[in-house]
Structures are given as C-alpha cells and as structure tokens.
Image (cartoon, rainbow, N blue to C red):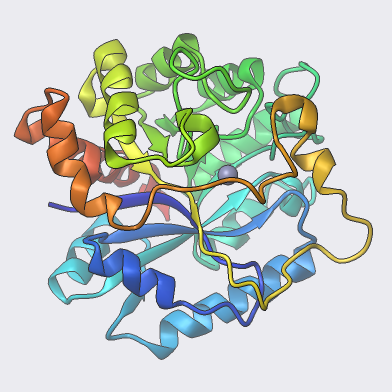
Length: 323
Ligand SMILES: [Zn+2]
C-alpha cells in the first residue's frame, strides 16, 4: 500500500533538520510533499530553503529521493527510500511570471496553490474579499497544467477555487482541506467545492489540523470521520490525506525578514487565536492507525488503499506527465 502525505511543513530555514521525515517514513509514508514557501516568504528565502532541502536529500540517497514521477515513487518504495516532492503555498513567489512555474518544477516543486489565505495579483485567499481568478491567474493555471505540477486549491477563496477548477485542463486537488459541513471554518470547503474537485477527477486530502477537524486533540478517528463525509458525497476515489503536520524546531527562526504581521496572514476574525501557535496536529503515528479507522467508518480495502495513497498516485500520474 502506497501512503501519500500531501502536505508537511519543516522550518523554512536552510538549517532545518530532516529527521521528522524519517519519522513519517517509519510510520509508513512513501511520498511526502514538503512545503518550501508561502506567500509571505520572499524569493531569496524560498531559494535558500530549496537549495538546502535539495542538498539534504542528495546527501542521504539511502533515505530520500526527490521524485518527478509516480514510477519513481514505486522505485523509491522498493528501495526503502522516502520519495519527496516540494510544494508552494501561494503564487507570489512566481513574481507574476508564468514561466516561473516550470523553473520551480525543475527545482523539485510538484504542487502549488495560488493564494495563502489573502488575495494577491493571481488569486483570492480564503480569508479575504471575493474577486475571483484574475486574468493573470488564468494564465498561471495554464502554466501549471503545461509544466506538469499538481494544481492545488487549499487556502484559496471559494469562488476563486471554482474558477481555477473550471480553468484547469488537469485534475485539481485540495492538498489539505476539510469539509465545511462538519466544521464551520473559513479554511474548510463547501460541498460545491468538493463536487467541483471530484468533477475534475481530483482528490480532497483531509487535513489533520485541530481547528479544521473541530477537536483540540485530533485522532485518526476524527480524520476518518471527515474522509467518510467526502467519500459519501463524491466517492472514496476522490479522497486523500494531507496531515499538514508542522515540525517546528524552536531554535530556528524561520519568520520572513522585515515587517511581518502574522495576524494579517492568520486573521483573528477568521478564528485564529494567536496565529498558528495554538494549532495542534494529529501525530505521525496517525499513518499507522488510519487504515483501521477507515475500515471502521465503512470503507472497503480498495477504498482504504485509495485514500491512503492510490488516489493521489492516480492524479499525479496524470498531472505530472510533463514534469
Ligand atoms: Zn497550508
């Protein structure tokens, strides 16, 4: 069974310790998408992080492999390596240049969403005014399709995400988002968004963040409840897992340089209490508990395998074709 972790965060710092990736691997994860930057991070910080992360991966070929295809994920699994790809959270690092998408792809980025909670020149964030996808945003969707990245709509405004899904020629995913019908939060997504995602052939990866699961100490059972909701709505073949664990290393300050106001990016009015400091996550061991938790909510073996990783393998197999 291939296990696909659609989103994980290390400190956005060149000295970030990669041992949390070994923990994920030990818990059974075969592929992980690691965040390398958000809209609030300037390009020099993102480049420094990508360079360091690539060096860490290259320095431990027995542990890690930076991959560009699902075939390489199977090869990595057979060789006992953790397959890794990078993701960007926001379009601001693209500098309003669609050709930047292919450059990031060449550096290992395999997945991108266009806005981190706030509006930018490309797309709307989920905690900002409603405008919709901009004309530049339409060109960016085409660039993502053509470069062979996974088009993600996490953190994106509702109407804008529908625009992106309508514009995309490839399946679209939510790499870490939960059903609004279960927990009222601006980061969670409506039934309309879930249906639109499934209609592209895409996958909604349920997040393990406490605020979005609606519980202070989230468990595999909470994850399974959210998976079951999406599966009942659109079919289990459209559900995946993106625990979104933030592996903090307190000695590393990875804040963006200069004027940086976390309450802008995580507004109190949207339900963030002291930004993300109070967020909790499902533990790494959730990966070992999830298959049984999914069986308990009624999924059959094929559906369990799909949610754990096969569904994202299917979508990546299509979206990464040109990678
Ligand atoms: Zn995120």
